[in-house]
Length: 237
Image 1 (cartoon, rainbow, N blue to C red):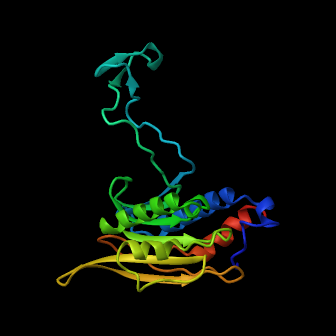
Image 2: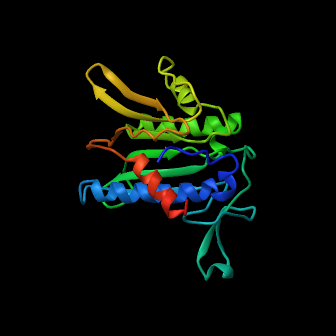
């Protein structure tokens, strides 16, 4: 099914983009897990919208001293206390995470590749765009395969172009606000590099599917057009 404009009326009111992305990411995860080599790789969904940070291990409580503080509200588990910061507090911009992560083995511990679905917030302000670019650049510098799917039509910024400028690929720019891009880090005798694919994804045209390169692994096709069509069907459109 050709790409539709999910960020302007009338479709914006019929199907919120958050609902579409949730279904679309799930479809891509399912498709990959049916095609990836069994037991060697596994796809996961990673969705986090908004500037919320959750503590994974311990809740930090400032009591004026370092050490452990017993809080009966935690069921008797000691929580780590922290002294006031010595250098104060700095602002922190956290980008939206709408990702399909492909990990080696059966656990989401060792990433092999990531598909980033761009959200409107990722393209909104300069700091948010920079945070998204830093995240993508970090994936490339770790040698991970990376794909960016940008179908956001209400903001014109091209994050692929900003990523290329950030990593020294200014000759590989792409015009237009909606596109799919893919990057494959390469390690060779001539040094480290990354192969780059990028094609427009205009509204009214089928969504292109590019190769996703897994670190130390095979190349897979996420089948973006087919999974997008399934997501729309499940949404009742």
